[in-house]
Length: 266
Image (cartoon, rainbow, N blue to C red):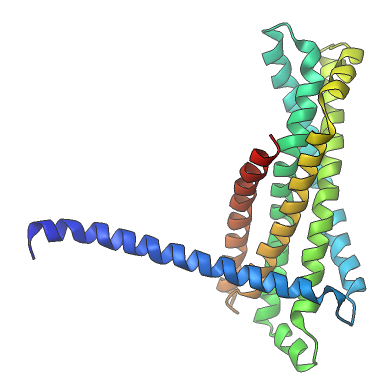
């Protein structure tokens, strides 16, 4: 083989691996979309999964409430401190309320709230479904003429899609309140100016943007985490690997979708 051919071989191998990885990712994306769509299509099929949906909604929503509240409070406080330091250089401390509220409602609330749900609830969803695969519970449901997609996947996807927007709304309220406490009580910003600027600058367009992000993130987290658990290898190592991949993929997906949705709501 000529020297030029030997130099080109590593590059061809690299692009070959890259192409195979891209095709595999596209195949998994299609499989996840098909699986999630099939599960959602069973929402009107009997028997209805109301009991399982309520149980999942409680586990996801109430179970994640404390971490959401703590994250929202400290996010608002840090924003107030950093925002005041920056605005004080321009003599615009009265805009602190608007800066904190817009930052939380438009970006930090949906993104950080989704990250907390992924770490707290998304990983548990993947691990729980993966363990069902290891212990052959999904096979047992099929033998009893129970559709595992309807019993296992559907309640978790719907519960996540509903719980995430509600948790993010709580995140926003607590974060804005914590920012007010730090800005007014600690940094002595005029309370009237703080509230007035926040009310004047925050519009329904900003609220709609944050609400849309939270709904999309909720559906995406539910679809990814249930898919990774349902398609995981029925071994302990496979479940651990699927749980890690679910957290990573869902987190990266949130960042990508955040950019896409932000470009639409500018």
